[in-house]
Length: 86
Image 1 (cartoon, helix red, strand yellow):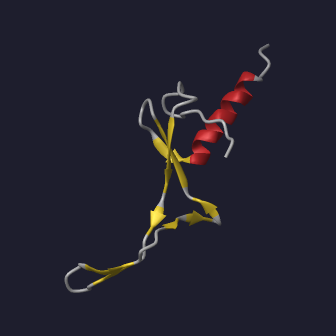
Image 2 (cartoon, helix red, strand yellow; image 1 turned 120 degrees about the horizontal axis):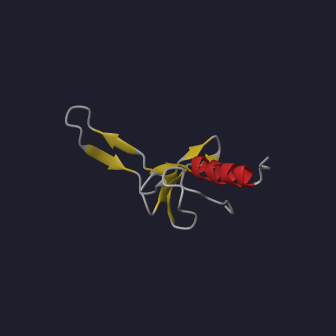
């Protein structure tokens, strides 16, 4: 996971982020009461298309989204910095 990030909301943060990894736990619930009657001891990583589901939160403005939104913002900024100005 060596990706450059840029917050697409505040556009000023390139270095301070929280990585949010989602976990799932299997449970069984009583259909009448809604009470959990059994819970697995293990938590599993949530996967999306075989890859870890990862969200990123900007530590400056709090904007949270999928990791690819932050990496795409960094790529777009890099591409716009490389444009020739006539």
